[in-house]
Image (cartoon, rainbow, N blue to C red):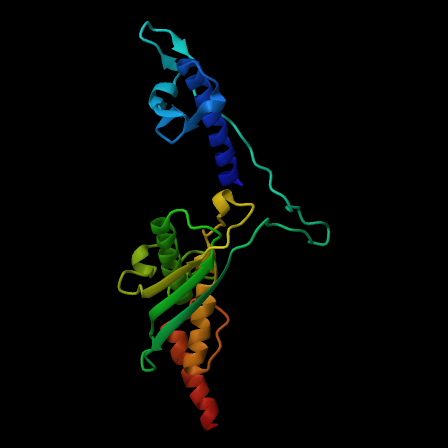
Length: 247
């Protein structure tokens, strides 16, 4: 929604720049084009005015200001959005980002330590706008999710006091725990998102813990339903399974 509002505001802003440039060039704004740096005459691009000279109103050589400060306001109202009714039914989203994630892990049975060697993510983001930024978002999101799945836990005593309030007691992933990652994007432009894009903020975090837990089950045949899955929990699960097998 914010992206669409920004696009609409930018379009209105460009029209304002053209209106001022039309007065400066003494032509009709319908004959003008905008390229990000200049507003120019379509039939002769050499006849142009820099945007920097239009943004605050064009000032002539004799000090007369033509036009106004370039500013605009716009909103965007999205379709298909509704608040849940009394039964909790309704569409809380106007579009959805789909994806798939998979984890390749190793487990030291003696220590219970889990190593995530490789992690793969694929998302349909509608349209990639900033390739470096979107890749960084997924890289960071997966690393955060590894922390949630295997390390991070706020512990409380019976009185509700935090037992590990300091970072040296709260394990988060470092570059040593960060796995090799394969990241791919599918582009199916979305009619609602700005420039056809969909959201990709928290999505890389959501599927990673279940993928890791499924990989743990595939490796040792034990299901876990809570995170983090610590080495101690792995050792206890393996010992319990071994006792059951020999019982």
